[in-house]
Image 1 (tube, each protein chain N blue to C red):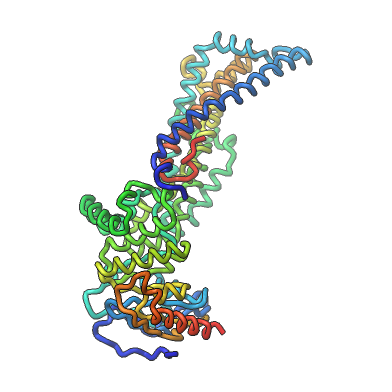
Image 2 (image 1 turned 45 degrees about the vertical axis):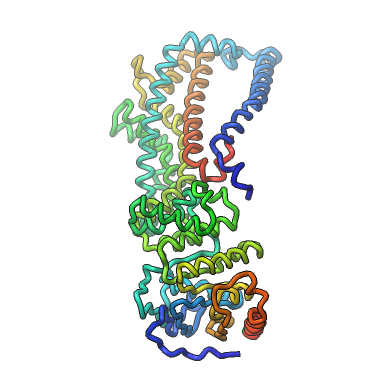
Length: 278
Length: 258
């Protein structure tokens, strides 16, 4: 263990380390440049037509041209993602606490959670639409079904894996069940919960986009990105299709990035894995 | 060497173990352990590894139920509530500061924030960590963590302190220092202690009586009084009575391992 002083101000030193880290941003930029160069090089060398692989500048052009459709689509998808994600977090937490509350609950309920997770979303989606109709409600439910499991699985494991000595400590001081849950199991499960959140955040836009393609409303401002992709594909607008993929990529990136920052903010004071910021 | 004779039941006994036995899955760990701890005593339990020392402490703490016999808290005002436990590792909550860790037993007991923090601060100062109250466990050395653990055990004003190889994970120097500090704390607070250790030197230095457990299924093989009196300091380790007792206990320990 190091002395007190240099570890004492974790927040400021982490910021400094982070600032120093921007120097490393040069490497991703360099690799990006190399990819772009070989992209162009490949198109020229192998004579790839635009309807198979459009050059990057054509994608940017198409993106600007279709910016209104893409933007409203992205907003729509982001909204569905966010709602689905929040429902997954809330539902996942409640379910995890229930599962961790007793051996009976775990053994009785967990198999059905697994069953729900194992059923492919492609076969469940039509049933969801049957019940909730076309539109945001169905898309949200589909998003939930895609991303709730990592939260439940990780949080439940976290709640159930409290240190045996710490549990004894709470028993020695006659802690009640809710005190043990609130002050020992829940904070101890936070790192697990954050891992679940990260995985779920990466899955969320996928769920929303898929929900869009099967339950999306095609009328103008209501069209999510998934529906936009279907249209571009049908119209054979290949550069625009690539631009839509890029927009979806940005949504996913924002989601995961936000969750990472959140996890760091919650855990950096005490959890070793979050002390050094990546 | 003295064979442990069943002690007379004295009215003032703080804790009495009566024919205590414990088996896990049919395997007998402890057998017929009878022991009386008087107020003010520091009883050290030593024995070969795996002999059920920790189980004995957990039985007294009520963390484990005995398969035979019972633990009686008798005599005076002692109830299980005034009992504290110091674990082998510091067993701190990593997400709480030193202050909040030390105040935890009082928080569980429902003490208001101001009261528990004031009390916790007093005990943090007594173990010499006044500058570290706002730090998190990961920022502390092993010795500091154990000091926090000891301070936490003191906040409930324990009548009986149970210590499970409390400084066993530390280097010898730190360990000696912490043992001296522990005895200094006792001069002020006067708790009774039952502790478990695998170090003969530690047992003799801390205890007024050393209990030697035999190999599995463990029972009390020897009870050796340590007539050194308190307070004790590092100078105590140089006294001939101390050295003699270390030799006696070491021999007793060897005799049960053969």
